[in-house]
Image (cartoon, rainbow, N blue to C red; front, side, top):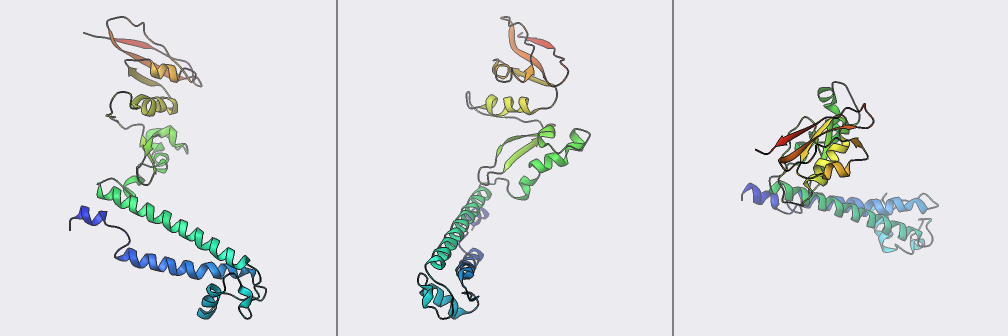
Length: 240
């Protein structure tokens, strides 16, 4: 079987089968054991196998268990609630594992591969990018999105060169360029055939736009945050 086929297999197989059985066994033991807190005699459902069997046999009438010190249905409801919580947690873990394997099968980065694209990594590189330590990841990098399967944030340092390929009106400017302009600390130079960035960020930055003559192919905006000393310039690129 190819590596791709192997990576795409269900996690409930091989070692995954034994891990699943072990997790179910632990949950079946832990739920009534924790629910034994209602006992007035210190009885514990998990102390002996026969106690565990009796706990599930008399789940909602625990007073029938000799020496249990349990009364009413609180023991049963607590046990079932804990089992439900364990089931939800297990299901979420299984979905995460399946999604991770699907990403691996497609050749996508995962695990440690994504560690260097985290907000923590941006903070660690602050001394290189900014020349001084800074705990704010937006000072030295910006988030470009989330990984499809794990939904982990993906950050890139501001010294990176990024190429976004997407069809018109797919959110290149609104989803990538405009947020980067807003989050950036310092001067920004943005180019475009429309004034989208200027309109969306007008309340946050000073903008100087060149006069739009027919010979202009696109405009260059030199931007600077209002919180800093205003210093804006403009230039034009003539369509030859």
